[in-house]
Length: 465
Image: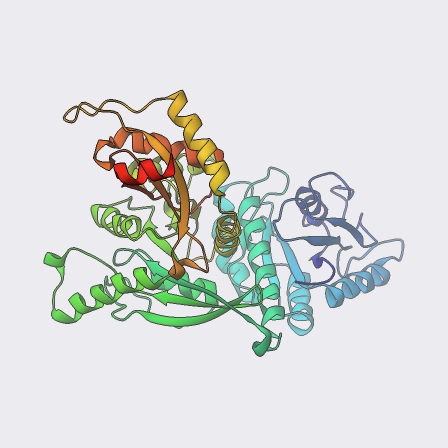
């Protein structure tokens, strides 16, 4: 991490909407916005309020502005200082006006001074202006992001892109750290049905096309271990073959690949379950989720292809619809949080490891025996267990404790062991009630809550009384 916030400079020719964009990202009106070219003359700086990564925005005067009052050279000089001292450049052009000769001069200047550039086509008030992206691509910074700073259009994508670029810079700084000083990280299994986007996701994380990406389902045959450094730790990404029905597997190679993928789940510290959100959760997704649940593995659901999921809808409505769909179709994996991403476009990838870190940090807070027993005793009093229909008895709780398996050291998954009068008296609805009580009082996103019931013998009960 940098000792001071990253600097993000907003540059471009006069009157393309740099100050309006600056105000949007800063979350308040700081720079003067006016139709007259060249209103901003000095560099204006303010913290960005819309990105997750801490950064400082720098609004510059228009490069090559032909001000009548002689400020042109000074303004361009200030802009060049901002470009040379900034970590990231947001290069703003006018989507309605098209490419201007000054845009080409600015592009040439940027190619020499800073390799980290995001092209923004501002004043794209409607989708009609998005078609100009191919024209601006010849500036050499990709197809660009269409936005309307005045109306807020496209700002979510721009904010995510800034976060992603700054995450790259963070990773680059971390890679410069002596490898010998890096701590061992996590074994992370990336699992899902064929063609859900697992390899594309790993490529997006690595910013490199290391694994084969194809529209043909089943391209990845082996469980490939790929090292990845993040936050000063050496993690191991396990890119697995897509798991599908045995009856659908075409040859023995695919069967053995599926077996290796299942073993990868068992040896992983955490599983990333990649689902194709645009196509919706399918039966095979549920089967893989069941496997993760049965192995009692920490899990994060990656809702991939989010860019194709109701793309015309509002952000809040789309997220709500995605959550409703995932929670309904994967209800038994309700402990797993989810992240909506587009692996092909690289959108929101930075949220994945931030969420993994949160899951691991929360997992270190294992509930103690005393608090656990008080929690469960209160739960039994508040809602006593029902009488078992066949045995005509109720379950009684004597005491409880937590046990952590040695193989779950990286992300501890405690098993809650309940000593009761007769484990055969447990009713599923009451077991789910106890799990929800633990989850409410001791939330641990991403971790399963396995309960183990053990019958106490009469002799044991007598000795402890």
